[in-house]
Image 1: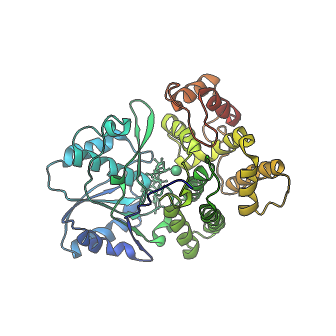
Image 2: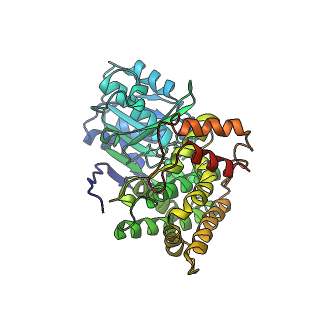
Image 3: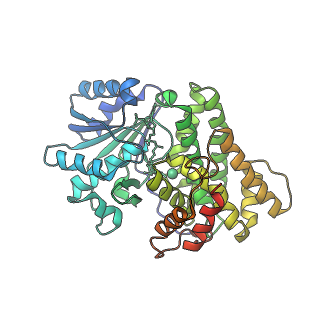
Length: 391
Ligand code: NZQ
Ligand code: ZN
């Protein structure tokens, strides 16, 4: 087991009607003038924003609201919010939405706190040295941004989707009311379940596999979110299913399911290039590439895939190689039951080879890096994986 520091400072306020506690939570965190961020309008239609602002007023707080964050959130929009609200006395940022709103908030926080252009932090040319205090009212279980140290933004001028990890990205609190997710369209529920699974899978395949408690937590989470995912697709207002998914979403990406080992995250890197170029939902970019990645790297350690399948999918095959193939097929079959794509053709259409070459070149940062640790992949490997998914 590698040495680690496990730091998850985000206070979780979980349960029905907890969104009405937003004002109190901000007040306890020391905020007085709140900038509330939200997305394309779901929180207006389902009344969540009204409930949140009513609770801010009841707590005696001043607030302003800014909506319009798009999925695959844009750098320029985050930068415009930061520029507009600099020196206006905002002392707390509150995201009401999902990963896209949260990540926009984190980008705004970087610029308000440290000054300057948000993209510098995402390119790694500047270090994040502080944050405006932040919290969230989560409306979709998926990205895990409510407790993660990451933010992901898309630079629409270059088509680059990039992440920035820093402890300053961890919000102070997350209000997690599973009832708020009842209004999710099935496609978003399915994308969310897939992303939650992938945050654990992208940690499960690493350069070590002797962290037995970490494995057990990861496997339990995968079994749980897969079962609850199917139930929520059938019964969108099943509170228990929505609760399990929501809690899995946070635990899957607060580092618990990969503790003591190096993060791989190859499939996330493959997916980010697809979302950056084609603006497809994050979850679809992952299910479309995971199987091709898995088949490409499987021979590195078929036993690892077999172990996953035996503990998560109840695979009884005793030959590791055959069990590994069953595991890969089994996970793809699960995503298809959710209606998720398991090939490029099923989400962006079959692409000409020049496009795949461009994607691979971008993903390896013009040949400057190998991706992942389970089986580090270079430009040629990445191209092979995109080609295998291109049907
Ligand atoms: O914009 P609105 O109208 O609110 O609609 C949203 C959006 O269209 C809708 N939605 C959210 N809650 C709803 C709802 N519709 C009805 N009822 C509700 N209760 O769902 C759509 C997707 O929202 P979004 O915030 O984009 O979803 P998600 O949470 O999946 O976030 C995806 C983004 O997070 C990034 C992804 O790359 C992607 O950009 N990620 C962030 C991570 C992080 N910061 O730690 C890690 C992840 O790996 C991921 O990369
Ligand atoms: Zn993800």
